[in-house]
Image 1: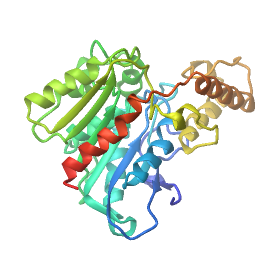
Image 2 (image 1 turned 45 degrees about the vertical axis):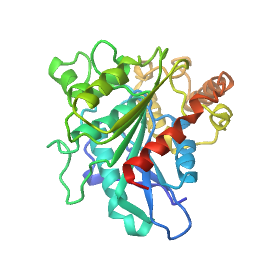
Image 3 (image 1 turned 135 degrees about the horizontal axis):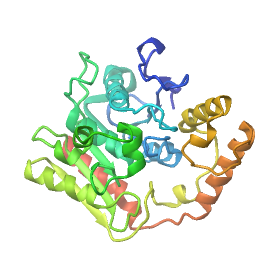
Image 4 (image 1 turned 90 degrees about the vertical axis):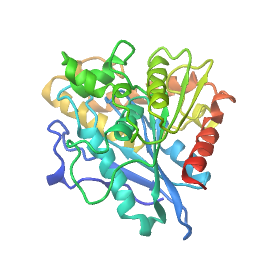
Length: 328
């Protein structure tokens, strides 16, 4: 594994509410000279935080399947301060370009670069799949179009079946209908959209399966290479849905950095009560107590997880799709 690297220089980074945070990319590379396809893992978290359970363990899974893998920690909006708009998409576009620019050093085939996004991270990956040539993406000589996209229980519509916190963090509240239309990705599919693999569970209560169904309908109508799997059961946020995920450790991960920078700033400003309530603590709690409450909440979450042998097949199904797209 290489060291985590910032993807922007401080003077390049534009998001006004970052609070000292810089987005990062962490490589999980093979220790040999074989040139391999790449998968950039983009965890979810409602654009309010970046979920640790959808980061490193997913990257390690793709690495074991023969990919050079990476985890992107992108810009989020924990306290709904400033709508993110195009910043996360620029983060992902920059990450794709970095992977291609370091293709020789990292033994990556620059023509076989995929991204795998979960929930709001699925919205981010889906956004690049349809919007790789938008003028809002900062210009570069290196292309940022994905060669394939994996969308795991993704937020894809900002209409009736959306996830409200995801929409709020990205385009604000109240929001304009124009912004909602722009970020409803099922309305942006064209023949140029990247090949897509989607999976969802039928009874997902947080991000309804209609998000994937609407998007798949447009992929079909526009002749975009794709595959979709709808599992008949399973809650939201299943990640790998295997024993590794069900028994995840509580080690500190880079995905938590931005959230706790926001916690620290909110405490200093006396605005902690406005922070997205990922954890429940008294308003006068100190920073260390909040971190401990976060850890206890994660312990509780892990204790309720159960693996599902059927759903845990999705990485192999996605691997088969990538092999087909990449002609491996």
